[in-house]
Image 1 (cartoon, rainbow, N blue to C red):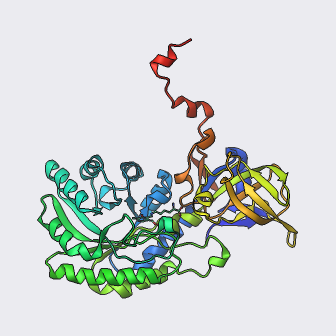
Image 2: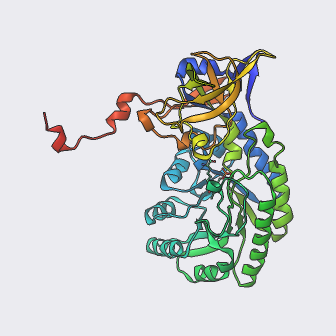
Amino acid sequence: MDHFLYKKGALHAEDVAVRNIAAEVGTPFYCYSTATLTRHYQLFTQALDPMPHLVCFAIKSLSNIAVLKVLGNLGAGMDVVSGGEYQRALAAGVSGEKIVFSGVGKTQDEMRMALLGGIRQFNVESEAELLALSQVASFLDKIAPITIRVNPDVDAKTHEKIATGKKENKFGIPINRASEVYALAASLPGIDVIGIDVHIGSQLTDLAPFEEAYFKIAELTVRLREQGHNIRRLDLGGGLGIPYEKSNLPLPLPSDYGALIKRTLGHLGCEIEIEPGRLISGNAGILVSKVIYVKEGEGQDFLILDAAMNDLVRPSMYGAHHDIIPVQEAAIGAKTRPYDIVGPVCETGDTFAKARPLTDLTAGDLVAFRSAGAYGAVMASEYNSRPLIPEVLVHGHNFAVIRPRPTLEEMIARDRMPEWLSNES
Ligand code: LLP
């Protein structure tokens, strides 16, 4: 459930009419709902109660510091994968003790930053990283709390670009080498082994792969404890999918996911951590865009929008589906026709949907892409020199621009002319 609903025929974000935001901010823009973010976060904490747990929001899905602040205020931890994300979490007022550092390629600079600023744990993904972290921590006279990410060799049955739990993927250490790598970790200075980490992929629409992975983690916990490691925390990653289209329904709910965790791992007495991104932020955001032209092609009509693949890359990158709805609700029973919905970028890949049935639209009409909160704004670029689009946060009757649209001058002013060119007349 989200808070983007039609009221008297006008699409609202909570209590704000989307067209009013468009009139003030211009299009295209991203719009997020505080109530939806809050609800989704709470579904996860309720699902894990009464186990000791921390829900660490995967910042990579939506990293605006105002959004992080909403979640941080509710008690969320943060899952970060770069120094930039780490600094965003701090900037949102989240303390280091609630920040988990994931990722296959942490640099020594990033390790240093987190050790000095405070960190809940590093999720270590290789022996090389373990040695580097031991070195950095020892040099700083700090102790780095760690889990080791294991790769359970489980097929997450999701898009190949976002599956991470098969042995051929670059993530984690093979589960059958875990004993060896944990023994190495325990022998290193500056390292405190506290648990195990696993993340098998994103947009999972079935609980079976989670179940397979978590049973393996339960076995591994017992084995590592027998080998003398004090395993007390399990980080189970993110990955629970959302319904991008009605045909995806029914999907497992956070409560089903929580019950699975209790069933597979609850008896171990570990603190549970999860790192959901998409399920918290995905349906908490829409992308609002304006029709620039309706163009009649041969055999199909094109709806040319002012948003493009640089603003929302998921359809061209993964063939992802986003529902696209008119901001002014279509009349009941109004006829639809198929549109190819495209942006202005100069490549055919800049296509959001093909033959998508919509009621008649004309230039100037507004449309909204649903489920665009996760991996939308964060994956945007300035391709075709299109400035990054604004982000807006709604809270009840209020809305605020939480990232303004840069002017063309500001965008161009980031470039620098080398001296040998600037002196030329
Ligand atoms: N933890 C780790 C270690 C991750 O790699 C990810 C996502 C998450 C948590 C959060 O997963 P979520 O709950 O959001 O599924 N750009 C792609 C998705 C990439 C996901 C990368 N890792 C997309 O637009 O579908």
